[in-house]
Length: 269
Image (cartoon, rainbow, N blue to C red; front, side):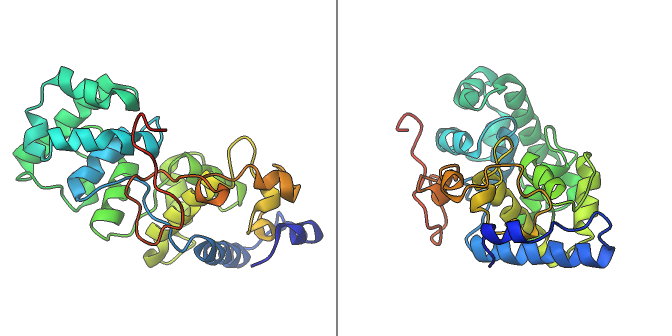
């Protein structure tokens, strides 16, 4: 793995980069990220497909941490689609209030739970075409569920993923479906789900939106946008987040191989 210092001595990928060169660089970035984040995983706590679906819907416009702090009480009250479909809207709203936009989210949760009960025998379907028919479920949410609950490869284009792949010049597209299609074309299908986790991990820990930690970035020599953020190694280290910065992660129940600390419950932060 090359250091950020080496990036200063190397030219960024040329503007006229060929398709073959782009594929090679993209796949090398993926390999480097796999070394840095061998423990990359979905950062939502869940025990089954229904919990992952609900948690992903709740994650819109908030952090995975806030969702993880909210869902234990939610799933204790409504453990199944049948339970949530029959929920009192006001009670449900209060339980999910910390995640923001709680009225709209409560409506989506009751709607998707009702659809699961009535159309899918209370089970989360394992097909994209079925998932996107559920209230509050778009292609991004469907890919999260398929990739992590059913083992169906998919790219998750959230704000972090879109930002990074544009910085890396893998695509210039802004539309999520176009980003997904263009990035998918660079990698074998078997890599799609883990690639998503690695890119999102990197975006949350190192390659921030406003002030990326370029000087502490392990893939700096491969990045055509190196220098947009802090390049001083010591200053950049202070910008690192979660386990990279010695702080708790986002999951209350992280996987066994996660090297950082678990998140704290709501009210114990």
